[in-house]
Length: 149
Image (cartoon, rainbow, N blue to C red; front, top):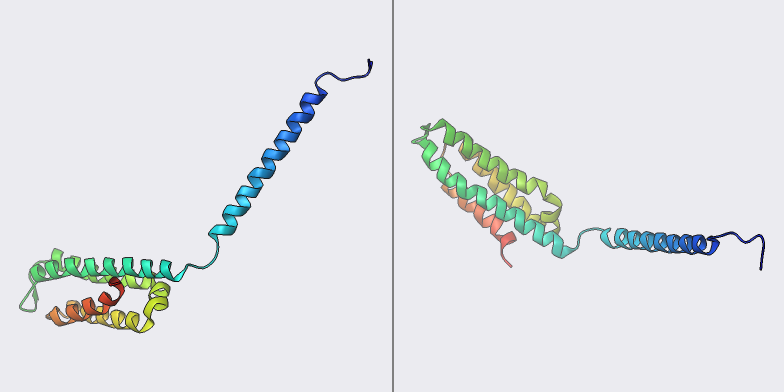
């Protein structure tokens, strides 16, 4: 029998070993999660993002057609609130394209440029209080390439 034996030493060593093991496991999990979540988006992710943004822009055009029809009569603003809403709808549609530019360009850069030009034409027609039907059809057509498939 040892006279210098410390009580609970084994238990302390076991606790330290368990704590060290648990810490190692947690660090390994964090490293794995960080390593797997990095990297650029895949083409499928970009297609999905572009489709979502194009649908958002199309929704804005849908609302625009209703508000603009109520707001502008014979080239004159008949309902200022609806006219302001129509202008905001076009801006939101344009912003949706701008916010996802990299995704659109990765999917189809030429179609993205067509969609931007078409939405700019819609914005110009709204600002000029002109008929927006042709510009709106062109914008819908340009955005449709991103929503199909």
